[in-house]
View: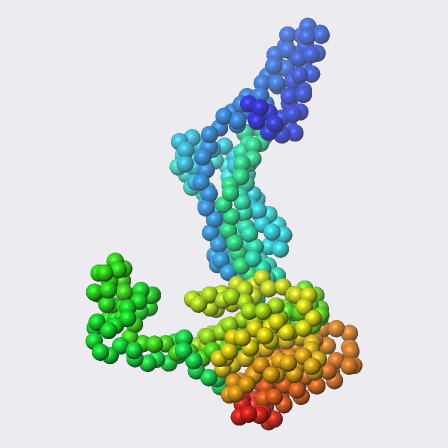
Length: 417
């Protein structure tokens, strides 16, 4: 009852105050009719508070995101499913979902009545122009009486996550040479030729040929096992993303940093789809990508990457060197000087291919007449070490200049490129 009184709306408090005033005036004036009216006016909010406070609605809530990942500027549909799991029908329900401001205004819905065991579904759309990982929920339900005198709020704890990934461009195929090292799916060799007992089985994965099922191991392990008849091979590569704050220009979705993140996502997905085993490195060091679903892992990581206060690429370059065995190195960098370019150039060695995507950051700022000379000096250093250069100006799609990644440097050394 106390909870019900605390839940009185402005209308409920007004009724209660008016009723009390009517009762006092009736007692002072001796008006029996006014006394009856005062009792009725006081009784209405009290009865409503009692009914709402004793309501034992049990509601089940579920939320579905379609899709759970969306690209910047794309839309996702959120579907709310409410089920009344009690034998009593509900009254008027006001539901409100919690949504971050970047996804839009908080959606509100009114459900007139939900019968016993009844189900209601409502949906709304969210959209964001900013990358990130956004929490949607929890859902709050406000229960009111038919007269709007009492309003009681109850909240669920369930919440879901929407991932807004960077914009990805479809890139044309460019021939990029690279060393082949073990660990992937591009080339195969036999490791089991002696007989059935020499087969090294592994667990069944979706897409495996059922003719490769190893029944003896399946019976032993209690789960479907297949013959590991092939050792997988794959070309390895590294992707460096320059996140240094001072190396980028502009603000918001059109800044050079956001263009760099989008370029890294586009290149990473393009190479992964061509069978390249990829690792991601920033100026802060290596980023962990899961072995399964590398494309989604890359997008999830880039969805939340932020600018760093670092002043040099030292940690990123060290991480590239420590990885080793990369047949291809792609660096997406902002503003840099010739000394930094020399340090980056040393990462590429042997027959490895190096591709530098240089953002023409002067397009994002007031014209700096010294920036063109600095960029040309950086290009000279990298091309002199066998790197291929892709210059990305402001407001230019990466797909329009990606063909430059296939152009070998005329000044390559050591038989590279």
